[in-house]
Every structure is written in structure tokens, then in C-alpha cells.
Length: 210
Image: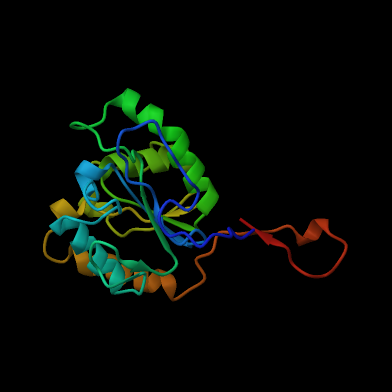
């Protein structure tokens, strides 16, 4: 199924109960979905676009640009086959607490499932733990205490391929190159997560679904 929309910012019309928020941005039919924590952590509180407005955000944008997912890194980057969003899209006064995340979870979950990307790229330890717990069968099986060790690694879940990304605020020499290399290698092969339901139909043609 293909999402039909010409909107890049907030293509599904998410309107959480928050004074200000930074909605998802990008291709509504993207194969790659970058997921951050919240605007105060990863940028966008002033621009309205996730992963913009800070040096760390632009650092990540340039890594994504190196593999063709982002064009013209900046405050309103062009994207190709990419969607970016936050687990907590509201602009909080300080770090969100558990109740804040719970309030925003329905919006995040609905948007993630609407995009139905093949590859999830959670940024930072907290987001990586949440994605692994909620969207894979790898809960408790991946050590997230050292994000540098799993940065750019492929983790195969039950429905998504997850590639954790170390928080760009913590990147050291070589971290950008590690992510670029990992994505290059991934994009060089068939990374799609699909099931063939053609066996349930009468004709010989495959019927691939997410």
C-alpha cells in the first residue's frame, strides 16, 4: 500500500496536545526512518524540522547525505526515501518524563506504522532501547549500554531491520564514516522486509506485503 500525500512536513496531520511540537518530516513512503528522542535533544525546536538547527543534527544530516538520503543539509533539507521523526515530538521544558513519553506514544506509534519503513535508525540509547523493545523480538538481547559498539550494526527484528545510531552529540572520529559505510553496504543489497502471501492466492504471481 502506498501513502498518497504531497506534504513533506507532518504528512499524516498529527496534532498532539502540546503548545509547540516538531512533527515528522520526509517521504511518507520511505524505506528508511530515522527516529530521535525529542526536539531539545536532537534539534528542530526553532525550525520545526527534526534533526535541524544544531551542529550535531547537521553532522547526522551530512552522513545521510553521503548515501543519498538527504540533499542540501540545513534547516529544510530535501530528503529521498527517508522519513525523520521523534519519539516525543513535543518541545518539552527540560527532559520529558515517563508520563510525557506515554502521552506522545500513540502519535509516534501511529506515524511509524503508517510509514512502515523497512529500516529503522533509532538515534541514541533511550530511543534504541524503546525501538528494540516495542518493534522487534530482541528485547533484552542487545546490549545498548555501549552505543559506540553497536553504532551502524544491523539488528534483525521480527518486522523491521534496525540500525542503531550513536547520538551525534557524542560522535568521535570515525563515527560518521562507520554509519556511511554501514548504510552503503545495506543499500547495495535487498534490505526490504516483506512476506510473500502469493501462496494464498490462485495465480502464480507473488504478492509482497510489509
